[in-house]
Amino acid sequence: MNQPCSCRRVHLAALATLALLLACGCGRSGSEQPKASTVQIDLGAALTSRLVITVHDGVVQLPSPDQLTRPHPAVMITEAAALNSKVTCRTLPDSGVFAANLDHPEVILPYGVAAAGMQVRMSDHRTDAYEIAVPPGRYERLQLFLLSNNGRTPITVSLHYGDGSTIQRSTTVMDWYNPPGASDPGWVVLAGNLGKVTAVATLAEHDHHYINGFDLAPDPSRQLTSFAVVKNDSRSELFLFGATAVRVLADQ
Image (tube, rainbow, N blue to C red):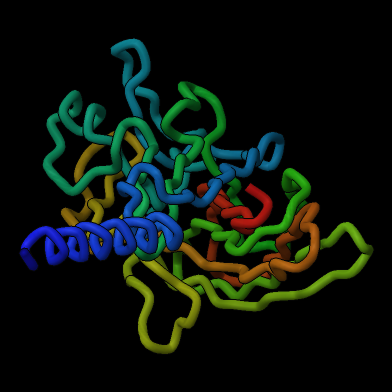
């Protein structure tokens, strides 16, 4: 006589549990969870140089003349270009796409679609300053992907907001021979242990070179409109490969 009542209680408890899971979102599959909206910032006219040897329509695309004439250029190579040139080393993906992980969202660097066009912003040993427009919005993350050649490079980046305010971030870009260390807060590795090649696609060093990313930590309560980079006179060279932002979840 008690069995039907017991089964009914179990059934009602199961329904209550299911309702609770649905209410808190715990019963959703991973594909149904809200996803952060990633924005690949268009560097446009700020791109000035070619640093990555690529292949386009079966033809190897070498770096810019400014790299070909340097005695110790900072040159990287993609997988297809390395195969074509019979170079064996750690390479960059042909597409320029880096899958999201705990350190960064999905990142798409311009070199993957540049063909014979410009891939990076190069700042030589002299002072360089430039500004990049950002699709107006509130962002919880804005990462710049850079390397420094011939030593470390200090930079200052100004974040410009729609209300007319500006916040500055200062950091030092480590030489591309090194990953970020304990003394480099805000930095992560985007592409690590890469090979270094010459400007004519011969092997220089097999590994231990890096493209690293720095989070500018934008104010998520304000609308960001642009950022400006200042690289002061130094013995080093600076290369900006790309910038990727993540919108505030409430704005997606």
